[in-house]
Length: 154
Image 1 (cartoon, rainbow, N blue to C red):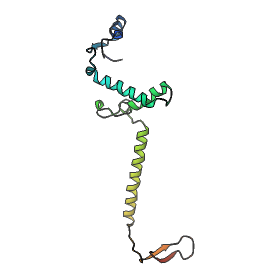
Image 2 (image 1 turned 180 degrees about the horizontal axis):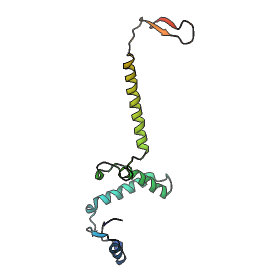
Image 3 (image 1 turned 45 degrees about the vertical axis):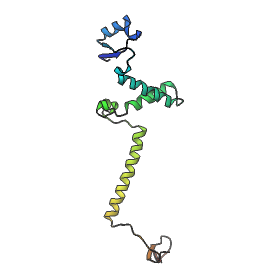
């Protein structure tokens, strides 16, 4: 449970029941000026992000599933307030696999394959060759007996 709560002067936050709940649980309650959302910019930004995400996910499943998808993605997103780390990485001490991270792995594996191909070609003396029309070439024939055939570039 939080040690501090910042809220507006809404009736649900100023009720006697909420005051006693805060005191019993050692929560310091700080009121922000009414009708002044700038004083709660992080909270307002979160609510805006939440609403936009739910609108984008509309029709993708039940409300419970949408909430779970939102929370998973939100918690796996790097946060400037946490030195650029996602909250889940700090809590679980590992990176979660998200659709975006899987896409990133695909891009990295293509890059690794390209690097490995270049290294192989460099070590085995393979190099790109350009041919002109009429140049004599030797072609490997994998089907018939003599395996190498002389030819000319057309």
